[in-house]
Amino acid sequence: MESAVSTRRRTEELSKVMSRRIGDLLRPLADTSIPVPNSEWTVGEHGAHLAFAKDLFARIAAGERLTYSDGTREGLAAANMESLGGLTERNGAALAGMIESSVDAFFRALEPLPEGTTRNTPIGAMPVDTMAAYLIAHLMMHGEPMARALRKPTIMDRQSVLAAMPFIVLAMQRFVDPKSVKDLTASFALHVRGGGGTYFITFDGGTPTFSSTKVRRVDCHVSADPVALLKVGYRIIPQWGPIATFKLTTWGPKPWLAFRFAGLFLPP
Image (tube, rainbow, N blue to C red):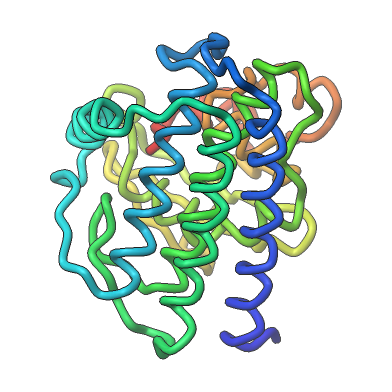
């Protein structure tokens, strides 16, 4: 089993690679006003948000007591819009440097912190190593749509998504869609391929319970390629392509529930 130190180091290395990939997208762009499909923001605005957010992460990790939002999706959206107005830089090279240097600063701040140290993040308190998973997930959440807008290859890879899994599972717990779950009573097993683990999610009358061990008979098993899982979960692509290419598969007594699974959770 990988130690906490080696896990943190691996997340650091992958996060820095991810920030450089995003930097490589932005750096050649003098004009970043390119629209991003299915987004209200341009490439430059996504880049500016990442620059602001990574600086915020670094400052929080360093021990500054900062309150960014109330932790709800609505509160996050409002805070994001406000912060976007406060950072007017849109030059690609400048934004690339800001993102990369802030990711470096975040991990420098993390280095002396023992496992279990908590910080108050934009979506609430969490251990700093889960916060590191949050950072790489957030980079992919915004970087991938930027790559698609620029018609560049995907920036996501399996190892980066696996490093983000502690945050992804936490976010699933915190951002269940109340309209989609309603009175749902069903149990799911999410199997993340490539060593990502299995997570058991049970809904009783719409109320979810997450566990690393099976607590009742599973109605629907979902096996997911990590990259496909994150792209679908973040609403970057619809689920039908990954289903057709067997990157998302299902079995169990009620396999049709798999078609609803991604829609039960909201992206943070």
